[in-house]
Length: 170
Image 1: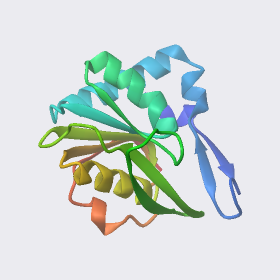
Image 2 (image 1 turned 180 degrees about the vertical axis):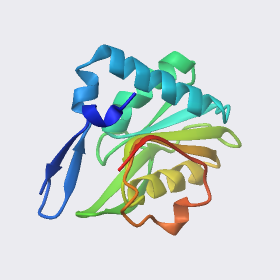
Image 3 (image 1 turned 45 degrees about the horizontal axis):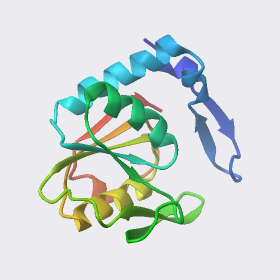
């Protein structure tokens, strides 16, 4: 199945020089969305994770469906100000700026296997921050999982030690 037909490329968004990959058309087509979820569940279950950690916000769309179908508890890694204290916070760089991610510091994931899910892997800054947050709680990152992998964008070295799974590459 060619999922490229369900992803729109929008140039100069959110700023000049950026090509935004819009995955919204996948959610408008239930059979395609179901296919995506089935494929990602199969891939994620190979690492037999104890938890699935989804990154705010589009990672939540995939993560909640995958966690439900695979019956894996879901951890939400949020943007700033969305979680009540106590939290852990990690900064990261985007191709168009800097931001932060947060996680509840009360999660009990010590020595637990965690698969991370997000929509698009670009530079790797967001997922690198998510890895640091999981590992700060002594969780073990088992795999990094994405719908779209932007292969022509340089990746951070810090994510190269983790198994990488994706459905579409550009």
